[in-house]
Image (cartoon, rainbow, N blue to C red):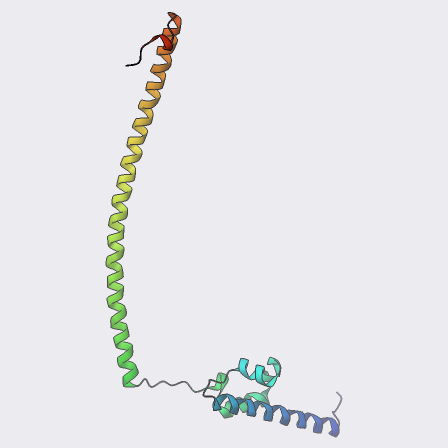
Length: 158
């Protein structure tokens, strides 16, 4: 296995230091704007690749600054937030009950409409059947009149 020369090691060390300085400046800038530090934003500001942020030395810097995946999560919920959350929960319960009631009303209306549709469909089928019977009788009547030599023109309209 090849051993890297001292010059190369020095060059890599300088490059690492430059990268760390660049990232630290970006972190300071983002925090100065009271924004949450994310890898995406660090990549945009520094112009470094996402692979750079997988390097151990970069992860150590992120951990030291408690940013990105190393950000501390607050487990204590303040009383004010708890009150707001409870009020919001109660409002959502009331809204949920209201919406359930509306949904039941719509289901009742939908059932009535389905019944009405079924009735109208049945009436339509009956009227269609009667219409076909009348057309058949009309055709028979025309054939009978034609057989005895009478045309419709000679019959007076009532």
